[in-house]
Amino acid sequence: MPPDRIITLARTTLETTLWLSAPVLGVTLVIGLITSVLQTMTSIQEQSLSSVPRFIAVGSTAFIMMPWFLKKLSYFAVQLLADFHPYLR
Image (tube, rainbow, N blue to C red; front, side, top):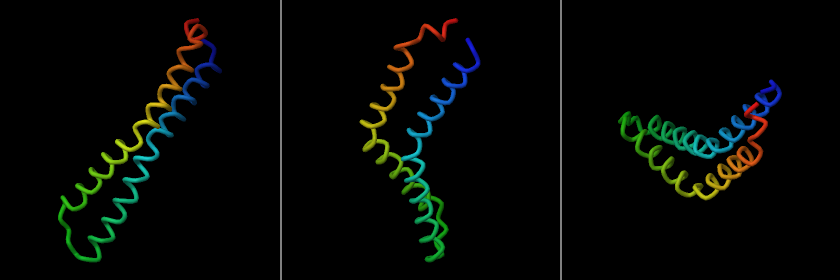
C-alpha cells in the first residue's frame, strides 16, 4: 500500500476519533472546572464530589450524542469499506 494512502487513512481515522471524543471531553472539562471552583470556594475536598458529577456528565453526554456518534461512525465505516480494494495491495 502506498504511503500516501496510509497517511490519508490515518488522518481520516484520527480526525473521526477527534470528532467523536470532543463533545465528551469538552463536557468533562467544563464540569471538572466548575466542580473544582466550587470545591475551592467551599473548602470541601471530598473525592466523590469531583468524580460523581463527571461520571454523570459523561454518561448523559454519551447518551444524548449517541445518534450523532453512530451516524458519524457509520459514515466513516461505509466510506472505508466502500472502496477497500486499494488497501489490499
